Length: 594
Image (cartoon, rainbow, N blue to C red; front, side, top):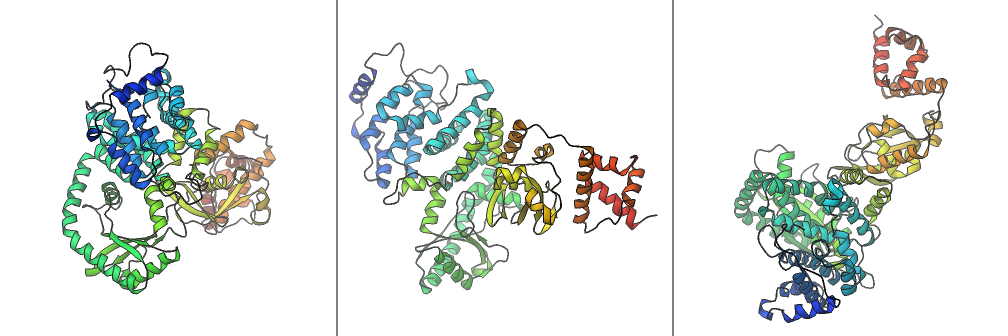
């Protein structure tokens, strides 16, 4: 995917009729001796996880890839075949199956050589062909600026059929990021930014922390080289000084867990460079912020995590406000673990992560864990719960005709900054800055379209108010509003102004879809007056105030130059006059009539 133009082609001229057979014979005849076999390391890694892995098909896939890419070189000057081989090696380290490794070896052949998708299908079957097609980019010369967005859209659609497409793409980008030094500074920055905006959060959403850590660090190295060097130097120095202390912490934790008859693997767990840099910047620290960290992986059911937590808190005093329970409330990528910070030996703060073996596997390998650790009697495909996010993206992808809009919506949906709120007895994850309207559409299109009001933590709040972590939210629609809010006079459907503050792609697309399918209903002046009055009344309630008569409204209308109260209330409905401004001036009039 990053071949130098004009550096050679896989084959010149026309291909013979018996191309597949001729190709196989040629590659077998030119196969290197066993001691220089480039596939040996790949086969060894693969069979360490899957003892019945098919080495023969891997060698055949490599032979075809090598012959196809022969004469092509990377920007570094290395033979191009080193790239697909490295991508396959990354996939093998993740523990993916043989089919994925074959596709990884061949992932650039259709895009960069004369090897066709039909030939690939004929040689290796439709599964491999689907995976390779899914990561094959669109031609920039034909699609222009839309090529990137169209490629990502195509990849997401293909992933809906087989999620291994995304695993190969992430491995491909990781190797390219590792070898980015051969490119110009401008190119490095561009690729690193694109990686940070889409592929890193995609990797996080799939839960593959093993890849995300390396991608994060590579992005930091190319976008903030000075900060990367500073953090790296700090870590190298801190590790030497910290080793004796961490050995003591691990030893004491093992003793207390053994005493409480909790079987667990305890070890230190260093953080990667980007994670340290991120917390350093977020906390405004002048020196790198990196607490010693301990990992406790219990060999037992989920309840043993809490037993281990009690043992650790009995040994060392917990730091208030530094406990998070992702076991009972998993993250949106299904990450589960207990996080706590304690005052360890010598009164130094120590972070502790507690999880089961299954949770640990899921945290490290995410959606790839099902391929690395297939469950007995079950297929290796990820569960419906793991693919819920992808299914939702595919749902709104079908509603977005413009590829650039799709990419923008995907970036927003993948945004690393998110909030978790609670509604209707369940936890909902939304992009940071989301509003009650975003939540309403997350609960269902009908709830969103007919949303009239919301309570946040028991108090009425504007539909445009930003939700915070842990908020408990109630959404009121037309049917709900009769008893509590008396706002059922509102016309059906969403409001166009919602598009100015909603954050989630789901809400944006549903609102646009509604207006595409419906003509905005006509509304009478009388209805506008009623709705304007309702908006003012709702704003007054937020201040725990009310109006006994229209006299203050008449006075305010006169002072603002409106001919009467109704005209001012129509202005409130039309959003030329904000309800909050009206209420603030009404309160001033009533409280200070002079």
